[in-house]
Structures are given as C-alpha cells and as structure tokens.
Image (cartoon, rainbow over all chains, first blue to last red; front, top):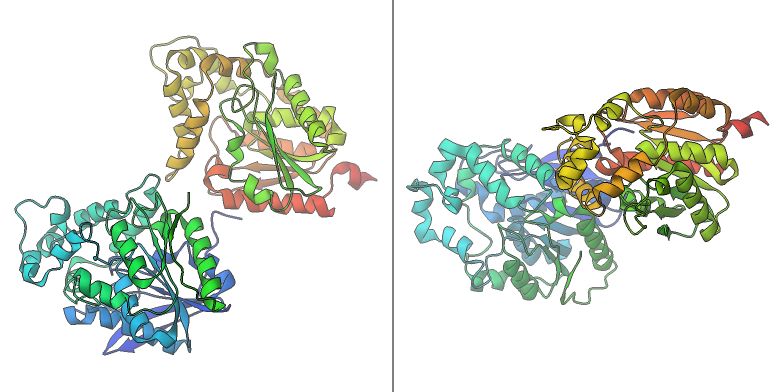
Length: 314
Length: 281
C-alpha cells in the first residue's frame, strides 16, 4: 500500500461538435449513470477527484473536460463558450456513451449549463445535484455577479482598472499581464476555509493548464438566461426532476443566498456544508459523497417526492 | 486514579488502541476508530495525564507498571479476555511489557513507529538543562516546557507533522497538548520507564509469542528506523514500511494505515496470521 491508488477510467473518448473536441471519461458500470458536468474552464474534470472513486463503486460515472481546459479543445471565439454549447457537449457525451438518462452532478458555473440540460431535455435527466451553484438570483448577495456580467458594463472587462484590487482582478487586461497572480488570488477565494492547502494547490495547477487568452472568451459566451433574478428563476422553475443543492455559508465566490434561491426555485432540498467554501466537494468530500449517494438512490428508485427544506451537516 | 475509556462496535473480536504519550489523548486514533469499529470492537483509552483521565501530580503514578494495570483493568471492565493491541511511538514499550507480562491478554501486537528505549538524542535534549534558545530537538526539554508550554506544543506538532497539508493534524495535536500542563507531561515522561536496548530485544526475542506487526515511515530522529527492523526480526513479526510517507501516517495518510491494520487484524482473526507459539505447536 502506498499513499494512494489512482482509479483509472474504464473508457475515454472525444465528442466533436462544430470542430471542437471535448474529452470524456467513463468509470464503473453500476446503475444509474452519474454525469459530472464541469464548472468554469479555469479548472477541469479533476475537480471531481474526491467523488469519482467513491461514486464509481456504486454507479456508472461520466465526466468531461470543459472547452478551454484539460483534454478538451480551446476554441478562440466567445460564442464557442456560450452555456448552450456546454449543455450540448453534455448531451453529446450522453449520446456517445449510449446513456439514456443520468443523474447530473455539477459545480459552480456548471449550474448554468445544467439548468439548460435539465430544462430542455427532461427525459434525459433523472435528477440534479448542484454544488456551490452559480445562480446570481438572490437580491443582495447575487448582485456582484449581476453587475460583473451586465452586458452594458462589458467593455469594462477589457479596460485595465487603475488598481487591480480584489474583484477588479476579474479583468481581461489584468489576466493578460498577470495571469498567475490572478489565479493565486482567485483560487484563494475559491479555497478560503482552513485546511484547504491541498485543494488550493490542485486548483492552481489546473488553472495553469489553460491561460489568459483561452479564458477571456469564456466570459463573453452568455449564461443560460440573462443575469437577472427574474430570468434565472424562470429557467430554474422549468425543472421537474428531484433537485439537491449543496452549498457552504462561507462560500466566497457564489453566495449561500444564491444557493437557497436555486433550491426554492426548483423545489429542491438545500444541504448546508459549513467549512466547504466554494469547493464543498473537495473540502468536505465525505459529507458531499454521502449526500450524493442518498440523493441518487432516491432519484433513481423513482421516489421523487419533492425534496424540501434545509438541513446542515457538521 | 480514574482512567477513561470508550468502546465502539460489538464484534466478539476486540482491538485495543493503547493510550498514547500524555501529550495526546485517545482522539489520536480518531481516523482509525470509526473504520476499525465497522469490523471489530474497538477500545480507546485516554492516558493518565490527558483527555478525560486523571492527572495525578506524582511521577510514580505514570510508571510503566501503572499503565499496564490500566490496560488490564479496562479489558476486565469491558469483559474482554484478550485483545489485538495497537501502540504508537514510545507506548510501544507499554505494549512490549503487556506482551511479556500478560501474554494471555494480547492476541496480537501492532507497533507503529515504535520506541522501546530512550534515544540518545532525546536523552541529551531532555537533560541539557535551561538555555536561552531551544532549536529543533532541544525543545524536548522540561525547562523549555515550563517556560513556554504553548510554544513547545506548537513546535512539537509542526515537527511531528512536517509534510504539506498537515494543518488539520497540527491543530488537533495542539488542542490535545493544551489539555494538559508541563508538570503533568514531565511526570508522565520521566515516570514511564523505557527499556534498555538489549533487554528490549531479548524480551522481544524470547517472550513475545503472539502475531506481531511493526510499521515504519520515512521517519525522523526521534522515531528511528533502527528500532522497527530489529523489533520485527526479534519477534518474528512482519515489518511494513510506508515508502515515501512521512511521520504520523495514521493521521496524515489514514487510508494507507487503516488498510494495513485491517489486513493484519483480519489475518489474525481468521488464523491466517499466527504467532510463534501457534506456529511451534
């Protein structure tokens, strides 16, 4: 026995859409299938490293790298990074692996593409677990992302701020000259809770597998719906499957209030994981994995009584 | 003197996690107990001087014989005839004493990075007297403990868990250390008689008959590899080296440790792993 034994995929492949290749992996052969939908392209599918070995013991697990990182292509145009493109990639992975239906688990910005997938392809989605969802719908705490993604303010994204302090670092000109410093700052927001040194090291490493010129177009593609509470809530209300939302009150990237708003809009259950920061799946993997397993068992056996109410794990 | 213990699980096969050095309490085994308790009954004992056990203010109360009696008293209290026993670091000497004095109560013995005799470097530091500054191992000094106990505990935790990503382990060790005080720790350290090297190896060779597992990691001066190898050889036991892993494997790489422990304990339970006594008959 050494430090760790890596769980290797049982199959890998690419789907190609519009000349863009997306890399996928398959693990295990249980029922049902779990589709892991990736977050923002600053990281890739290794963000599921603490889920895959566990889930693959019980289920068939599919993961894929987002356009812009990992084993997937890095198209240069912003339209290639529109959320409908990621949703279509997810669907293409289901098709390529001959998967009729899956429970979808997603993280952060992946919430947007997953909302599209679940709203428009209900017959393919048994249930959705959103972790630290990007869903800027809460009145106050969702405001920062709504401002940052406002189309009228978009030119500011390309103009270097006089002082790149805090969230002003979320800027194309700053990324072009100071990408490593942006990554370091941003990932410290992502991995903000105590004892996250390993998680931080991972996130920085994955961010270095892409670059500023690849990430800049990912910001311009457009969300699942306009970044307004009304439009975001409207698409979430279209979901009919069981929903679990996992979020940490100490998340410094996407707010707990947004997660609660998503649980409310979908009629889903909210699980609060204190200490999880923006990466509950990496920082509190046992709590998250057990919750995912309970959710999958429930969604798959067809007991789709609405999950309602909130509770907290230690 | 009251000694606190807990029992987890309800298997007829009992595993006893021996009390660690009084700088820690039985929560030292927090990453082993839930796993092992799925397969065995597990007893965890707080040492005299820490946790929920008493802190008698006398050096004699921390003798090796007192610790042996504590373990036997706990086994009696829970109605366990014999147990598979697991020790860490200097409490390997406690386990060796149990094997020698109560062979019928020790079904198997696991020595994790054992120390059985006083290491020369440790002895030198401990007896060096008061000084202006303490560097590295010099911190293992009673005057230093009395002068700034918290600083010592923090140094010890960082020195014991030097690998990256050990902040949680360090935090836990500091918490344990601050549950006791320098005078108690000095009594618990000086009151517990370690073996002479030759005597320890002779006893291991001639008196230990149960199945034995010795584990060793990358190691530091205080946990020398030169104890593990000779002990495994003298007892006719197995030696497992965690190649590439640093100190406190049980806290920093618990999965690696738990798998090795379980494989050994299951082997003992099934009879696939036997001691010299059984092998001889």
